[in-house]
Length: 47
Image (tube, rainbow, N blue to C red; front, top):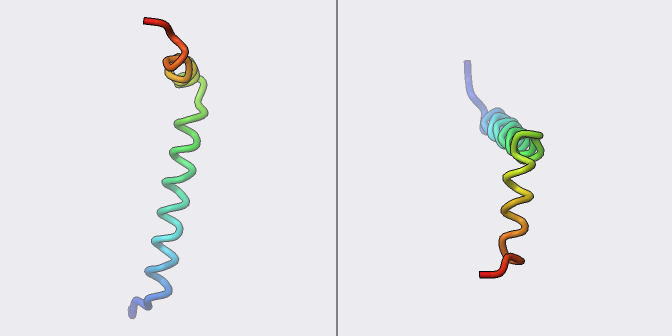
């Protein structure tokens, strides 16, 4: 089996896309929602 540069590029693209989808699922999950909303309000809290 001869691996072509285009096959390697396709694999890298698919891995990057899978990583992107994983980050999106992690960021928009219901379990993380309260943590992110709390972090979003940190600049507005008074000392």
